Image (cartoon, rainbow, N blue to C red; front, side, top):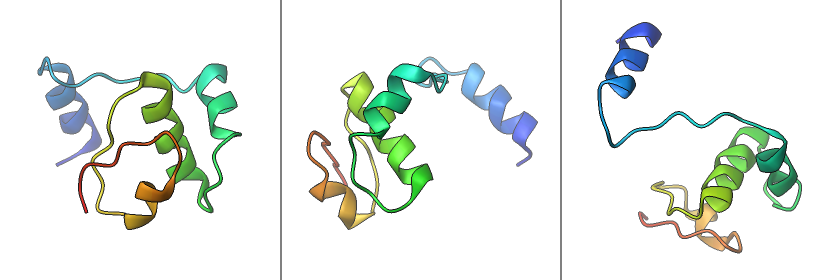
Length: 71
């Protein structure tokens, strides 16, 4: 699947939403201790939105304020 096809799929479904990476999420990311920047941004977005995160990364379970629902 191409990136354009992926974006079309996301926009065609009600249960997906693209969230802009803004200064609010970046400020939350600064408070998260996690080695990889991209993971820290994902975790910060979930924390800022107050939503659980679906990930098989076991280290996500150790991040304060994160509800990881897959092991």
